[in-house]
Length: 362
Image (cartoon, rainbow, N blue to C red; front, side, top):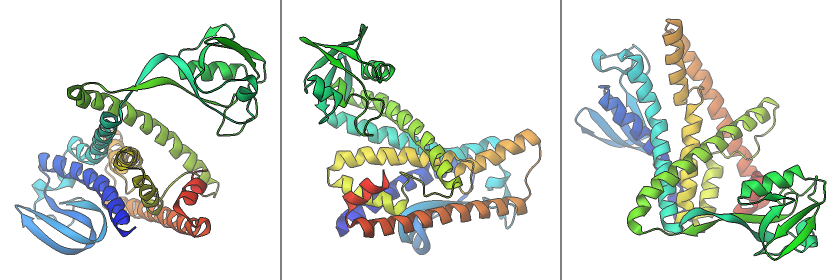
């Protein structure tokens, strides 16, 4: 268990370090003095200065950070020409956005590795029944795993989307479903168990194929990019739900704090390395999307300040900026502490990690 926890913390730290590495590289390119690049979080254990940058190892074993000269304002500048605050709006925005972009790139890589080893999904042009729920309309109509759905009513079905769309159009109505070799009559439910759908079947219109090894890195990038975009959209919509829950004074449903993420990683690592790599890809997209938010201390807030300054031609005072960042930091830390408290109590209540995951994702 201890080894698994260490591996989970390392995996999470890699995501944060990759994010900070993005800031580091673009800051260097923009001529900003990077005072420190830290592994883990302070207090500092030791450091080695290479060139003008201190590379440190710190005591709290999670993530990392970069410290840019002039990042906190005009105070105590020893190299004004190398200060972040003195750089152009374009350069500052590039440095702020670099971590977000790096996390997307890491996600694409992780998804690409997963697909390269597990196989690539390919549309077959036919929809096959994979599983039939007990006591569902599908079971009562005689559908069984392996059946191929040809038509619903007089409409052809060639993809999962075709099937889902036609079923939703016919909820509460009796409709004929033409299969290969037989036709059945089904009445899709208007009210149904959350994990079943109106008909009660699991379907697929895809098959897994393994291209020649030399093609896999190229296909991996393509599929990895599509997967990153898919999860980006899903996570972005999920943030809206979380915001609604928080505004109502409710605990955000389905949201995980750092403690919960480590627990999920522990469980996924039991399934093997590749499922863990896939989940790390999802986490990397998550980190990117969260950092787009215009809320301090996330990177999106820096970009938002730059945009506001460019539009209004007025620079926020250092005092006001410090207050805004402090308020945002307190808000985010408070939310993380609340989520951690809730997750610890839930784990104690559920008595196992699988039960914890099932409960928190409901």
